[in-house]
Image (cartoon, rainbow, N blue to C red):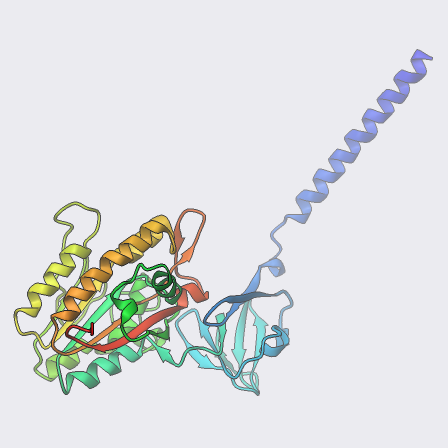
Length: 356
């Protein structure tokens, strides 16, 4: 009896070992990185939410936007990895090819290669409008441009609702403006000062610093306007005029108070055009998150700077952001095709005291 039980025991152990070995072999084979298993897809959003990530797996598959979503839309645009922007035509399609999704016309010709995302019912305004508004007003009056780095439209609305924006929250309501892909500072700044999308101005990521076209600073020079470009502690792009850099002289971890003082000093020197870049909202967003108390408190701090600057400016004021910010487990980030990163506030107002 004992001998029989021992035999059964050893047979059972052998079966278990064989089963485990087979399972491990199957699992290992299943995880092999096959070429056609690359995750191919694009984000589909509107100006208020991230609708879905559309994933495609079949090479040469052709589909239309309406095949991928249930939402109704009047118009839609697509953006590519080099900053291309194209409105979607009814006769056009998307095609999976070479491990990416491409936007093609009715004849199969590629219009946008490696589509990063589609936005349905996009805002009418774009951050590229900034160049044309600045150049338009510079012909008639002095212009102050305030860039609030990393300030998304959803943050703007949240700050107003929760009383973190006491000054700007009482002014004309900001319109929604579409940023560019990739929604990072280099690309956003280049788009604003040139009026061109990244595919044209040459700056489509954090790596590029050279512009392929003239900027608003060249336009101001040609008009013989006295212009100044006020930055944080580093220059972002190479422009026709050198930026005035501001180090964190008081060691508080931010340059915004120094940028504020530099801007106030510039207003005493009869400049016709002041371009001011605040970085602190973006810095706080990365560290603490886009809607955190810390970031909101810093937004309130910048709001006070903006109030003082705008109240002392006699001319037109344009305020916007290069990109927004979304939440992560570590804090916040940007650079993705999602509504939090891609939609920012855009304000045009008169300088002087705006309170009644």
